Amino acid sequence: MSGTVLIIEDDTRIANWVKVYFERAGFSADVTHDGESGLALARELAPDLIILDLMLPRLDGVELCRILRRESDVPIIMLTAREAPAERVMGLDSGADDYVVKPFDPEELIARAEAVLRRVKGKVQQVLTHGSIMLNETTGIVTVDGEPVALSRAQTALLSTFMRHPNQVLTRDQLISLTFNDNFDGFDRAIDNHVARLRKLISTDGNRPIQTVYGAGYRFVVEDV
Image (cartoon, rainbow, N blue to C red):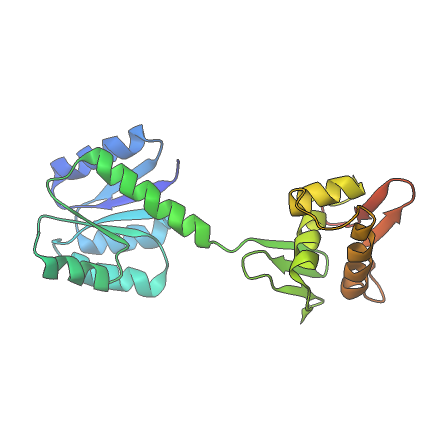
């Protein structure tokens, strides 16, 4: 895994030690040693992950975490010597995604960081846009010319396949395999009915993107690729 990590830790030895381990794991890492400079760097660098010490000079970790959380969704792992459950709760309540107590195993910290980044990546909305058509694959929302269009789950999946393969001729078998992973109830000709209904729903007077290629299949025609 790769990405940019900002380490905000007032103990220089620990900060440099953590930096080395993240760089060994394939990350790029920046270090700062107080809360105010940490906030400035976080705003400047827009890192993929922040490792944040709870006890910092000039601006403590809890308050810094609250500020960062108001401004962005950047993943934050709180790093502290405090072991009391109340301190952990305080760190998490301030917006931290995870909490690691010193002394810690650097391999565990890396593993926790990668787990947090995987969770965040899973929440990222995947949006496909071609011309006037937009498909949010996370929510299933489809708009044409900015207006929402109600599609069935199968139609949405089929549109996703077309939008991921613009200007390519796709046979019926390819559409079934790419869209339904071969788990398709019906004859291959049944896909024609799905395509026909989808084409009607997403077409406008000036835009009919799904074209039939006679003897071959279908093509989703776009000009913005």
